[in-house]
Image (cartoon, rainbow, N blue to C red; front, side, top):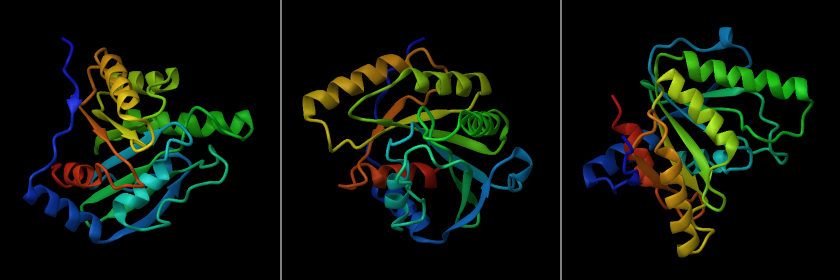
Amino acid sequence: MTQAFGLAAEPDAEAVEAGRRLFAGECSFLKGVVAMDGLPPADRLEVCFAGRSNVGKSSLINALTGRKALARASNTPGRTQEINFFALGPERYLVDLPGYGFAEAPRAIVERWQALMRAYLAGRATLRRAFLLVDARHGLKPVDGEIMGLLDRSAVTFQVVLTKADKPGAADLARIVDEVRTGLGAHPAAFPEILLTSAQTGRGLETLRAIVAGMA
């Protein structure tokens, strides 16, 4: 059955405050993981951020946490080769996955870290939700479909977060949202709300913080 996939509703004041408190508290880099045996203990809820290289993932994470350099944005898209774990308070991990779909790196290295990302998504029991970042100027690409298929097969709930929503005009943004909505209809693991965000203007950040804070 096809779901509606409407835009995420704005949270109420209590949820906004819970999100503000969570992200204003401790958020520190824990470790970068290059192999599955290096993962930290699965002792707390975690959410991960995945997306094509150059989708604005580092900028969004930094904006969410209010820390300018928590997630390092490479000058060369595709250089990040680790799964980076951040401790978000004492009860959550925030996980930054390597960008996919483009990389200025040798093929063997690309394949190794893409395999690591897929192994993590398929095998991490404490992963509550994957936030799939999609550039609001371009919409879903075939490589996003591959990741969504993996998440379906792994029964990992994922939610599409459109980044750079300040860039396209209103008509173009509405068109992309409709295209994304249609694309999500075939994916049983897709969460039925799409979130519009901008690291530059702050759009959607309160909502995303509240979503993470409200997970149990």
